Image 1 (tube, protein in one colour):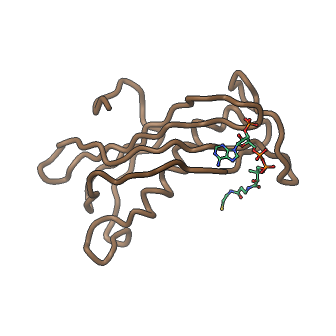
Image 2: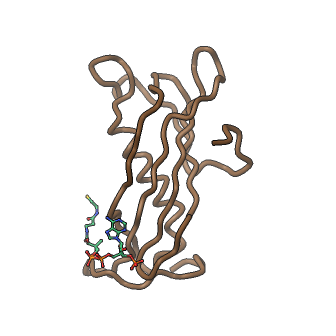
Length: 131
Ligand SMILES: CC(C)(COP(=O)(O)OP(=O)(O)OC[C@H]1O[C@@H](n2cnc3c(N)ncnc32)[C@H](O)[C@@H]1OP(=O)(O)O)[C@@H](O)C(=O)NCCC(=O)NCCS
């Protein structure tokens, strides 16, 4: 991917020692959580009421993330279905050391389903104009 995309990231965060695994690098589950949140930001305008995550497709970690790296989560909608939207999320780390070096950490396709207050699926807002 282009490591300096023109668009703004949905989320940008620097992670702390509390987010590390026993090897001292950032725990993959923390990154998965942010991927889900970043995708939900992009999916939100398609939700008449709210969205739930139904699937996250094949997340492969190509590079580790270290404490102090600045992590950007770029999210954009790639498919609008009847009750679901698919969001592609790219994860880019800017290294603390050497400062500013950018690496593509991982990417995921996350699928969200619009649901009503009882958790039943409902049609999405097709043009993403909000609920
Ligand atoms: C989301 C939920 C309401 C879907 O209900 P369902 O009756 O199983 O829905 P369907 O199988 O008809 O799928 C609904 C949509 O999701 C899509 N979808 C479902 N599973 C999918 C998968 N594994 N991959 C891609 N898309 C999927 C379908 O293609 C469909 O899209 P469309 O209407 O745009 O064509 C239900 O599965 C649910 O409540 N899941 C739990 C969600 C949740 O709590 N998430 C947080 C996890 S802690």
